[in-house]
Image 1 (cartoon, rainbow, N blue to C red):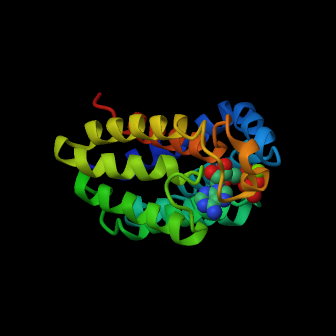
Image 2 (image 1 turned 90 degrees about the vertical axis):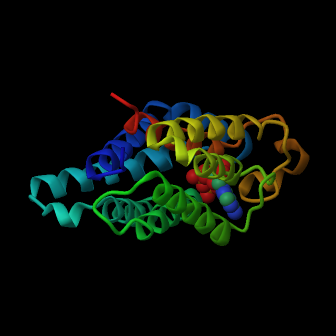
Length: 215
Ligand code: ADP
Ligand code: MG
């Protein structure tokens, strides 16, 4: 199985559906240790991503202009321009970097692993967070590493393993003290709460697994 245009589009649509369905939860998490806008930020951003996908389809954009890399890069640009918070530029840069790493009409598991590594690199170079700083990096890093380790088992298995790793990484942010982003202003009081961006990253990887499931 390869990550082709249909699966990339399914990934973005599943991500949009997930952040919309879980908006209240993401907002509640961000209310506890941030400013309470993470759910609405991502719903707004991914709603614009969906609108972009629909407009392209309606406009009959040629298949060659809808490669996985082009779709991901366009989604990244949309997130950067529509999401005001820190998470928009971070997710946007991640998707743009992943898109740049996927130039072909479809991508095998090793190429997808490399693209996810590029995405993580973009988040880390823009935000400067290390694993353990209680940010989305705590879900991205184990997810990208696990995907790369499992790539030999195929796209479906690697995506499922990465989703589980992201979920576990998000859960592991609970006791951490935030060292980056708004939550770091709280110091030790940020402990005892899940990081909203790590939880939304787990949703993004669950969406990838859903799009790449064997049917
Ligand atoms: P804002 O913090 O501007 O209100 P959001 O609420 O949308 O933006 O996103 C907050 C999330 O962004 C945090 O939970 C965290 O995961 C992530 N984040 C914030 N700063 C950084 C950073 N420097 N590096 C990585 N992730 C970060
Ligand atoms: Mg916020």
